[in-house]
Length: 509
Image 1 (cartoon, rainbow, N blue to C red):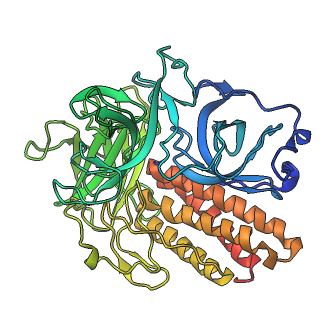
Image 2 (image 1 turned 180 degrees about the vertical axis):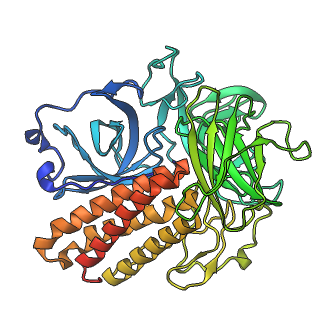
Image 3 (image 1 turned 180 degrees about the horizontal axis):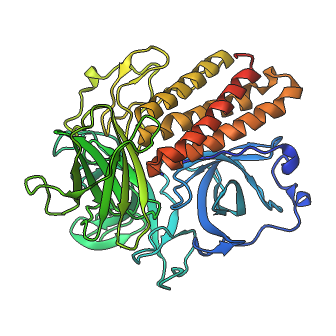
């Protein structure tokens, strides 16, 4: 998801950082809490609280901003590097490289509450991921804490784990390794997943330890991994993968010949979910996402296609031509609320196949890097070269560094904005997050490294534009995950206005 996400900038007057952050106590009404919220399901002032964990990347003393590489926070946002302020810094002292925990709240993507330093040193290259604590009970998989305790609903003890990003075969999930590569089974590219790291023994799989060590026979323990909830949102059948707003049901929509919308259903572990009790209907939609036809019920697919998992519903849509646009309504049980997903297919979906040899891959210069965990863009023109670049599920390309000049950054910003528009026009909602978030990164770099090129009187307008752009980028990310184009259109308008304001600040419009 990711998991994705807003960087809300604030003025220095809102939080006066000292050289080491140790002088901030005068800015607050009291010291920071000595311990973070114990439950990610806690409620404060009507807003749900979540446990946050991340690494401090940079400190902007003059603006009072921390740049933090945050881990995945289920139900709040995916892993993302963002800027934050601290609500009550007290006598807290931070430096780049510190691992921190904090509490964050629904609807507030700019502030870290109750910040604590966990590991106050730069992470070594071979350092293990920090220990987190999670719930073992169904329905509480999203609980993540930084210290021992009990699950908020079941009361069962939290389990300690280490969370890491690793790579797996798309359809043969038992194969996991630490680096990108090729699946040894079907030769497809490995895809990134979030997993729990532990250490075991070759001759005794019951050993399940958090740290390296020795087995009973004196041999060294070996690394192993377990999949985690929401750790794999990669589409299985070349379609578009969305998450329902209950954070548990997931679905992948595909457009297959002849004129068939086929939908696969999964749980939060991306395991096939039998469609017992499910109901769904679909209608053709127009370019604006409005219903343009009669709704048709989806039915269990034909026996020759249906798998033993019984997780497929489909509908024949004979009057729909390419590009195919649909509005899908789903209920997961008879008395459930209706959930809406928008799909647009530029072509028929293709099942993932063997990886394309590296020698056949297009040039990297000026192209979008492959998103790590969401449906990739297809045939997205490069804004720099105009060449056609085709991405297939699981294909990874190194991300080019951002330009260092103002003009180069402005060109990059325009290219990212063009990519967002093209993907939105094509209906590839699951891929919007990547160029939107990258546009945010470009705008932040302009503000942080080139603000002195703007007259001082105009800098507040620039800060406002970057704040609005980054908020819109996060909201586009979240709405794209849910597959609802109606939610995306006003967000895209705000995104576009903010882009224009940034460009005008530098005289490029």
